[in-house]
Length: 393
Image (cartoon, rainbow, N blue to C red; front, side, top):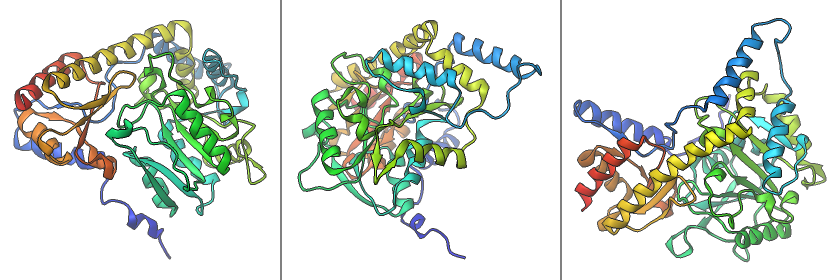
């Protein structure tokens, strides 16, 4: 019996697991210290009342024979897919219900989508990057080419001439840097994908944080993207579903490769390996897209963006370089005093009791940077920034 040897090429531990172990050790050694977490991008605002009401109603339906539901459609219930199509229509994007696939979150689908692609494909991934993009391709043994993101290009790498890719990962607004691609930049990526017969895997998990109307919130706002891109979205940060689990993936009918419809291949994969998201959760997700639901959710987004402003104001006061925080919940900062990512992580943890995320965990180009998130409780966040000022001021 043989194992998948590609797993031996992965880093010893998952980034956030390593952080968790460090924090646990420090907490055990300092039991009276209040730890404030600004590292992992987990939300703190509760589910909106319209979502809870919809889920309560759905639970009651499951308790009555006349409204009980068993297995749902593999691609998700029609009522939720129709709601997603309506949401996209407001962006000026026309989707069909059969192009929308409900999932248990973008992270899962970003990894699982690779099932429909050959392991011989070459993958282009930005650096720094969300670790899942890299690890899942290492697991499959694919060749990876990294695009350098840095302060000079505002951490928004662009296509390079002479580089041939089959699969391209883009994330905008970006995790971890908070950088957001503009329309002309995405047009260049779409042109590159079409020219190279490549497929863009577009992670739009943070699209709702974009406040600048000139910035795209979907790859399909770019002409031709329906022939070269798959889009992944999540309700985790949009509506606080990190623990509830629901997202969706858009695979256009126009997207063909190697003579095959990727939409049909993905449906076949899902029907084989995935039994869908629960009816109760999908009813809650449907409520997200109602008028009342969106009003309540946008209030939470404003809360997080105000948190981001508090963080960026503090960093500006300290003279620390950063990007993000305006149209994204992440702030990507340069470690002061030429410290390494883990050195500054240790300083903040040990001297300020604040947990951040070392940029080195997101790739070679993340070394010397740190990620902060705006998802914390306002009172704790203000306290955390006061502690950071005391340490770095």
